[in-house]
Length: 403
Image (cartoon, rainbow, N blue to C red; front, top):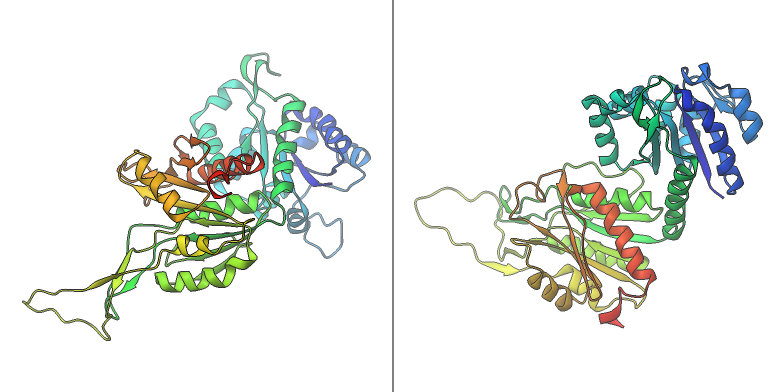
């Protein structure tokens, strides 16, 4: 049984939230309702308290349990946040990160899956500001249940009617079902670049920003997994609920992974590990001269291949490959050589995805299938990747080459 927080904003469609709350309860879940001030012009807290048997939040200072901050407690205890109906105002508020009322403050404090069902006048929905807010929320992992076309309350016709309750219900239940499958699953993710010391000032590295690794960590947490991230030097923020181990070099990353690998179910190698390092790093600073400088490079360990070689049969290993073209042959050879279950490829010849951008496009290669995510935000790519891997694993197609 999950705990669902149902946020209701000030749309005429607010009356339908009462039936939606009952639908969630009939499905076996606990429902807590939070009303915006505008929503209370259409429905009352007493209605939802009678339907759910739970207190209803109305004001940012509400404390059903004296001395406890409700927006924090409810955010920590929720398995899903559903906002239905969502008005243009609440969409724009959430997109800009404001927390001026209880619902927006609760959403700011919540780091789990969010389902949003907009409802408004068709022109308001089509407004570029509203569309940018929807896009921003989707890029952060929110799932939109699109409004339908029809006659809206103002008498106009177009896209803006709140989606059918059954669609909101089925979307939320599918997310909760996926979350329950991944609950307790331990995932180790490598992220970011490594730095290989030349002297105490300089190092060899690459353009990896760590954004894809951070997106993978957030996606795994949204799916209910326990996450450890071993990351090279990066300024990208990692999810608060992930265990983070910071390293600098490839050898340090390997050592950290070897220390963690026995305790994980899935390994996702998204780090851009330097293939070579200077054989003799210098102490101090190399001084400039007019002479040529030669630096001998030696190979770094292959972290994924090393870990996969001694893997437990129940563990799953997924590699990432940054390739200068969309030809899958090299990546597929890499998948077989490293003996990983699948490899996710991104084409670094494109300037609109991959390194230092917020979007990506992944091609997932396994022995059973080749799938492409399409261009989307890195978080959306990460969610697509986990859903695709989960489907392959449940069908038994992820281990064909390694059985």
